[in-house]
Image 1 (tube, rainbow, N blue to C red):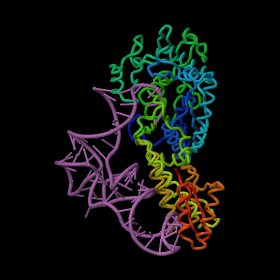
Image 2 (image 1 turned 135 degrees about the vertical axis):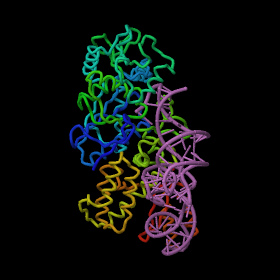
Image 3 (image 1 turned 60 degrees about the vertical axis):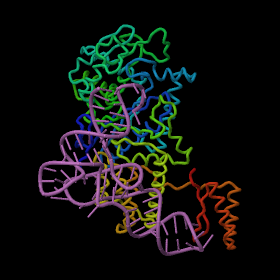
Length: 470
RNA sequence: GGUGCGGUGGCCAAGUGGUAAGGCGAGAGUCUGCAAAACUCUUAUUCGUGGGUUCGAUUCCCACCCGCACCUCCA
């Protein structure tokens, strides 16, 4: 089956043709570790995880490379401002290296909580300084660069005829004409960007390295070009990232890489649209109040309810975040798990291999292969699990198979929850009252428990309870 | 100012040139002391507005209205 992917470069869905049959080399822009990642960031990682898992499900051997930006990302993309990591270190009174370590660990904690697969290769930018310098030297030799004294080595975008092809020529022309105030008048073109920034005496950087141009640190775009080519070759299959990277970061990666090699940098570009906050404004790091993955359990939600929420909307459509939406997703996921548990019980221990020739299986993989259409894939799962005409063991086998791509812990055993002694006593008292047919007292107690977030359920096998969210 | 995207039932959301997946919610029934849970059923002749192409458009084209994002730090 053909795997189709929307390619930002051509603005259309294309059949994915890998460089090596059956394999996919993917580079995904990772986090800048100067602060916690927020749930908007995580939407992108969930979508990329979906791509990786979908390709694997469809039989591809995937090598995913993800960078950790631990140096060189300035507070402004115009190559001005402070290095984010250095700024964060100063703010928190830590060393830059401690900041990086702390937020890298925090990131992967969230990453795992959302069931994102660990990338095959992880690369911190600070471990690839040599590769970045080499790339700068190559570009310099080929005449793509110029040096601004006491500032840095810059890429001359006028030297690359198709500069800006990813974002669209007209778009780059718009930038060139300077809709924005140009912060650095010494640049030859407003869209030129730094390959290497020189340390300045007043700056007192914690992270800096020697280079042919002087002591300093790499420009933000350098790491992705250097590391992607190091691990995946001069041309890679798929490059992913958030939609904001189209016009600057990825455009400049292309400029650096293609300038240096003369070859196509990436055959396919996949961009995930933003999660936006409905009422509380923009989801951004600079805005301060942003939600992290840990906000979810704090509100009583399984982080995977957020994964499900993201999967419910196609990655190329803007997703508006609301707590109501998370609630609906959480209920949906609960329902899906309950359905899965029921099917498992019906299957009574039988787990045959999944029938890959069955219509539902093909529908499911077809949805994945159609530009990673997760909402459609989920619909297939729901319909299949409910379809009584399919033997339960077959449905179970299918559900288990879909976990490889949906990763929603459908069959997770719920940890036995303990109720505080006083509430447990109320549950017992109510059960006794109910047995004695004292329904008035029984209903009072049920109401009281409900007010404390405990929902009573009377089953033929006795009374049970469960926590409600709140 | 530049670029791009979207408007589908109460809400979220797939989708297609031949008459609308799925989820949440809601309503009815079964069950229950009553509930809850579960199960069954129901819930858009209609896809922003106005034109056009077509035997036929929600799906293609044009115009318009509305909303949003990116180009500032973002994924």
